[in-house]
Image (cartoon, rainbow over all chains, first blue to last red; front, side, top):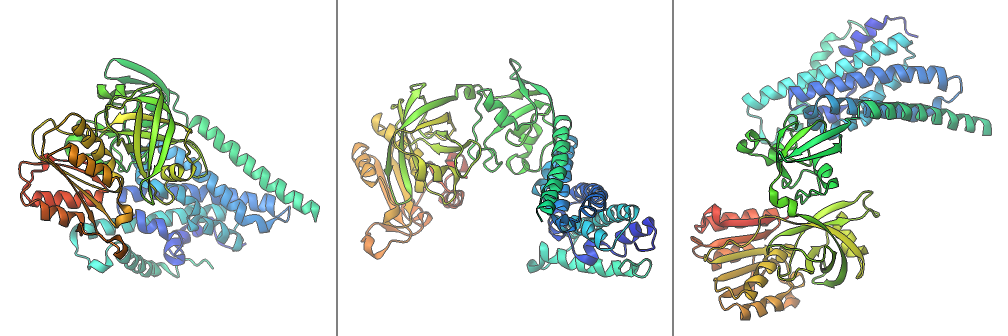
Amino acid sequence: MPEISAFAVLFAAVFTNNILLTNYLGMCSFLVVSREVKTSAGLGGAVIFVMTATSAINWIVYYKLLIPLQLEYLRFIVFIVVIAAFVQLVEMIIERVSETLYAALGIFLPLITVNCAILGISLFMVIREYSFLQSLGFGLGGGIGWALAILAMAGIRQRLASRSRIPRGLEGAGITLIIAGTMALAFMGFNGMVNLQ
Amino acid sequence: MLVSFIIAVAAVGAINTLLAILIMLADATIGNYGDCKLTINDAKELTVKGGKPLLSALKDEQIFIPSACGGRGSCGLCKLVIEDGGGDLLPTELPWLDADEQKSGVRLSCQVKVKRDMRLRIPEELFSVKQFSATVSAINDLTHDIKEVKIKLSEPAAIEFTAGQFIQLEVPPYELTDEPVYRAYSIASDPVKQDEIELEIRYVPNGICTTYVHKHLKEGDEVTFNGPYGDFHLQPTEAEIICIAGGSGMAPIKSILEEMARTGSKRKAVYFFGARSKRDLFLVERMQALEKELPQFKFIPALSEPQPEDNWDGETGLITEVVAKHVPDASGKEAYLCGSPLMIDACVKVLQEKGMSEDNIYYDKFA
């Protein structure tokens, strides 16, 4: 277990080790849903919830069930099942609370299930041997970091759409990837503050 | 070995069961919208179970709203006015609603879900839409990919429709679908024939309904459909008629022409039919017979890619080019178009260039 406080893990997961900008995980929905701040905020919120909840539950399942039974090799299947169940839950909640958001997120809501960032968080937490609290911080931080990145991207894209002329060949995914790269460079400025592996 | 295998299965099973119970609980609480009251035209009240799209909730109550795409939000036909209880406008509806419609509460009933009590306006004529059970009386190949399906009505035994309208055929669950789906097809037969209708159905690879019709449906099979729907029909004027169709777009135009022939219409009419090569052309004899029955009617088939073996000496080229060649001046005439959205958009453009006003162009897009 690394000697680092849960809060530091959270901070690191948001800034220095942003799962999206340093590991480039969870790209597909990041590229497609980041057109508007409002829907991005909705998806960001959903990802925060799913990541935090699944990192906690997956920690319990892994250390209290899979390890004692020597079933570590099942972690991929089990983690995905837990994630799928939670996404289902989030879907029901969002549909109840905001139909507009539900329709705007469309297919990307159920697709959180296969958002690699979420499985990535659960797997990193196991590989890095985090304690329960650290894992919670890691999950929450990872979610906040992902939401922060997509919100920033949506803000930039909204401005871009109204003010700048983008070369035709770069419209859509092209310019978005360039922005993502620039954002990743900017986030490198946080490096050295806290370091995860 | 066996023990560890059993432990693994039991562990995964236990986790899955727990999660399944959690989801069932959530479905019973968060996903449960209870009973909702629908008030239709301030007169009729229905109680339905909440959570379903309005379109299917109404269908369960035997109220059939037209929909060509079967509820995917891709045809924009299932519009109705929701005065209260519809919630916010959804992004999936926006492409189909203009500013006026948005203001007056028009919504797509396949996208809006019933979650609370609602007040609706449904046009009275839709209450005349019925569900029919029927038997397939004949299936004929019109071309290599278009079949003519004749359906004999049993209950109710007759359907009243105007030439140009369509019905929705129900596809029961089979390999490609787990639940019944509905697809719209125009009626090709003369409306005077109320006990049997003809459909022309073109095979679309992996299309749920077309695969069912082409690969599974046999003569003597029972089918269910509802209808009639649609406001594509001949206008009661004396203006000259230009019909343009491609592929299975033949159907509603044929129905209109058959009716004109029966009633002895004297209107001047020309019918452009576009196909790729001779093997995509069908019902040519029937159209030529109609030319004899209707003195003022002319049928102009056109091939865009005639094959050498076709020995084609008729019109060639894209349908738009052929229309442009034969119609120097379209002002004051009426156009009836039926076919793919691409073809229709291109033809509308040509007709407008030739001086036809948009109000005189009627079309049925096969979306």
